[in-house]
Image (cartoon, helix red, strand yellow):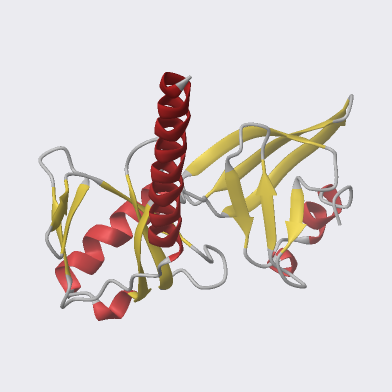
Length: 192
């Protein structure tokens, strides 16, 4: 009987330990850490990625994420661990608070993650079986892609700015719908 009592106490001790570890991990996740030029040092790795030294910790590779990618790409930049959990290490409140050469490294990573060609000309958009087949010219050249005809494939970011997302999750921007000619705008009537 005494043996079962010890096992029960060991289980309670283990459960308490796990709760404490979970509580500590939760507090760490909720803590907002601001990264500045004084407390964070970004460097380029041999593979072209970005590494970070923050306080006493060094990260061989970090991910750079925008909190407001379409409306405010220069502020509130989330720096995260580069594993599948992508835990946040800290936030850069303003990119201008980081030394210029490090800003450029971070901007390169942002451009890779948030690649979004600008649609400069709409050659054709065909609607078939619930899909739209686009033939456009972008800031990176001619492009063909497919979107669903559902309401979320083309989103109005403002009265004239559109965001188009294809079925693979790639994003394209039309900065000013009214800069397209009349025929091009007519081809987009399905979405407007």
